[in-house]
Length: 478
Image (cartoon, rainbow, N blue to C red; front, side):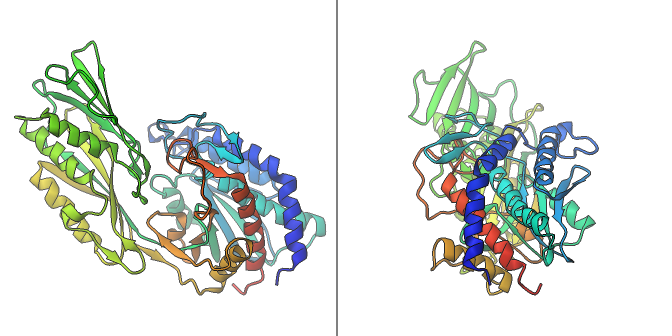
């Protein structure tokens, strides 16, 4: 087993490299690596920003002493070859969700404040990716110093499309064997052994609903399907509109085109964790209906009433799809992005996280029925079933025991509504680095939100846990 000398060595190593860790996180955060399919090209399938971050990530692995491989821009990996071709791997991603609004610090840089790092990706997932690189570097330095290889090959996978479709991992598994065990530092401690099913879909009006006589000219809100929108706007013909603010959560901005822009401020967050959030699209739809801006406009009114239903609930109860089981908990749903298209039609996305107690066909059926009742079509998109790993597996126990030694002796694995890379691999789990037991100051934002932040001490401890965990995995019979 791991001795105390190793832990002391790891402690000294983390202190020695920490400032380099922060600067490498900064180098990645400065890259706006949102998926941009409009500008995709061969070798850059997720767009130029995502590709730039992939290249930077691989550059960091090479500097750490690993052998990097760029897989046609889809994804990357870097190896520390071991005595066996069997692999222990980590996977983290260098793409991000859009910056969005509400930031008080530069989103595409790292701000250090009172022991925290702030910036898009410091927690999800550029910061954790850099931790995975420096965990591998510890072993690469050891091999270079002693000349003795590890029992297994250590692979550091550089994801590049996690925030949208995870098509990077689909490509990887079509071209490479899955690692013998893998963990992803893209979630919470102590350890996530299961994830709800994830489903995406799209409502579209069957016919144009915005026309010359419409009082509501445009409805726009949200950035990505898997984020609860913190901002939504509507452009309404000024005649008949109130001239003052309707409520603290709204702003009215007059324009020179005879229009008033209504701005709805909600409380954004991750689609998997609706507690404490306020969907700005739902808030705006309720206000517009109360103002009567769609009165007499049948198609537009029907769409807005549907939006009012799906954007103001997170449990599916109004649609008859509320469901829960003992392992995964309750179903959640989120109306994430609403758009007015050039032809006058409107669309709105749905993100559903579901347990094993409901079939996805029943969810789709409920959405199709709702769409038909409101003059829309519903298109089913990405669907991944619930994922679960037996927490008694020796590899899972090795990680969990290490966290217990460093943090909480009573910690137990759990399941989440979020979706990580782990669900795509046969033997995998999500493992930190965020520790929900640590209470952050109010000015520290969550992943996918403004002022996204993470404690440096938590990241330091996570790096130590990752190194010791990998050492323990290397002792197992895979």
